[in-house]
Length: 219
Image (cartoon, rainbow, N blue to C red; front, side, top):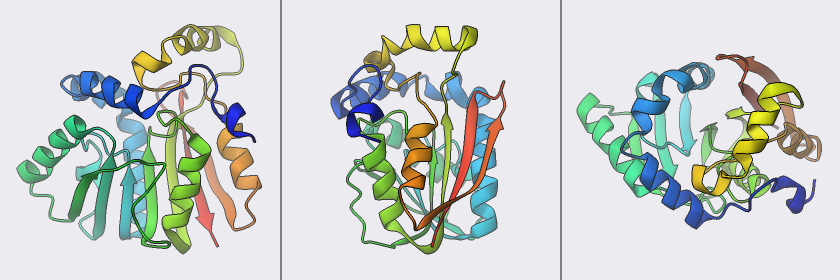
């Protein structure tokens, strides 16, 4: 799939994302904790079965960090320092000793060596980046052969009232900091184009099947 078709709707930039999540940071947990908890829990359960050293891409305020087992060694990155500051406070407050580092970083340009992690988890981040395909490529690059990428994300509806609502919201994507209209084909076509990747699992999550979990194996 072309880069142009990856970028549906408004042309989100890193500046848009940083500005949006600086606004969201003070209220993010209050607004999103409950609605996004099932997806974070599902992602953490998938990672806990794997263990090892894990990169959390788009860790945000760190809501999922307490959900990981203590034997999962975590490095979290996010573009928003205000969001990360809340995550750092969470780690200190809950004494999450398995969190090795939390740092500001662009998901499209990960500052890690090839194969540096046993797995990557990306909760609710692929719709927030300017170039989803490039972000997916970076996640695959830093996972070792035999490792997994675990993605939880909103996938846009094809039709019906939810699709209509998403179309209206898409007009404000730059302000929201994410794309409400996001087709599965962005992820699915990327997997199909790489012989070293295989989709292990794809399932809808609550609430209302608005979110999808995908587990991807790298050979």
